[in-house]
Image 1 (cartoon, helix red, strand yellow):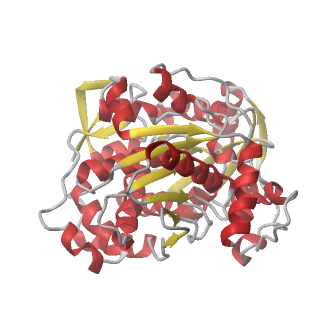
Image 2: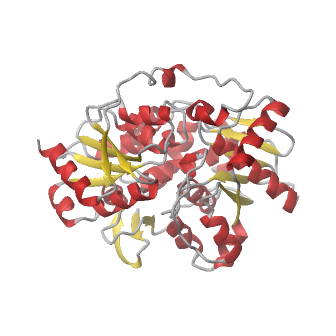
Image 3: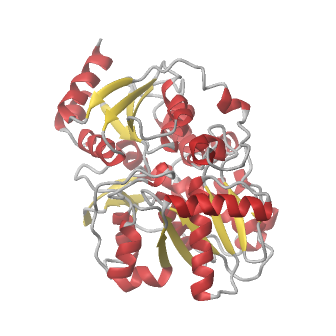
Amino acid sequence: MLCYSTNAIHGKTYPILEAIQLGLAPDGGLFMPVQIPSLKPGWLAGLGQRELPEIAFDISSLYFPELPSATLAAICVDAFNFPAPVVSLNDSISILELFHGPTLAFKDFGARFMARILGQINANQNRPLHILVATSGDTGGAVADGFFRVPGIEVTVLFPKGKISPLQQKQITTLGENIHAVAIEGTFDDCQAIVKKALVDPEMVKSYRMSSANSINLSRLIPQSFYYFEAYRQLESAEPPVFVVPSGNFGNLVAGVLAHRMGLPIAHFVAATNLNDIVPNYLRDGIFVPKPSVETLSNAMDVGNPSNFRRLESLFGSTWNNVRQMISGYAFTDPQTIEAIQRIYNQYQYLLDPHGAVGLLAAESYLEENHPINPLIVLETAHPSKFLSAYEALDIQVHIPERLAIKAHAKDLSVNLPNDYSQFINWFFDAHNS
């Protein structure tokens, strides 16, 4: 499997194992497969008899033919040892629950797979691999958990100080050992800019083996396509589904498009955002205009310049109508999000997290405007207990799973840094050369 950079579509290609070790292309672009693999003939017909680890193995073997089958199968069994159930809400809308992993967020799918892949291909190296990752919430916890104590790998997580929930922060900052947490005085976009700059900084590349665990890394993105197949496996409808995707950096939606291009029947995608509505505005006006991110209750989607938009352009071409034919977009405010949480809880006794609530609102808007016969599946991306402040004004008791509750009193080991690249680099060199 060969990959290209979105900044040089007709330029140099890279073997996929090299691409995922680099994370970001040397020219600053994002890696994409030169050719998206197709499902084997007849494979979908037997999907109902496969469990998630089997689905993951069958798909990942098309992307990673260089890895021994037994190794890849063991990685999939170990990485995906939790369910992803589809829960019916009403006759039109179902919820795909992606929060049953160890850190209670959909990022567990990508982070656990990536950690095991990189651990495997890094096993014979004599220098550690340094993973840099920026997080707007759930990515940091999933990556920290996935890579914790993986031999030969050091992880540095950058998060915007004061802009993720307290329990999300504790998931990142309490592990220590090979996990280093840095609170940046800024936004997620500032954290992401530092990571991207560091990954192509000649001095950093010369001194360290570097990679990233954001969805800019293809090995984080590919496993996120697996649960689209898992959701389809559980459907009872003969009609192809519409997937409603709460979207921040848009890796989750790109993963769905990859699944569709591989051959999974999907009728349409709906991108659901909060006030950080750059992509819904693009879908309406045809102009992509990044802007400073806005802080909201659905903090994992507080992204003002989504990196994976470049992958969408690569998949659909830069023609606006090509994208609009397959993707619709809607944006909602915090008051609308709160209203949806309370209304759905009252009506169905189902508790959405703020991101899932934004998705639910988008599903309802899409239904009202288009009246499809296709079932709608909303991706519920995190457990409600990670966002307790969103429920303070509501008459709703939120259960906190024990694996999250025990983090509340653990010691925060993070360091604080200003939004300054040179100061981050100075800290990094000091931390890893002492």
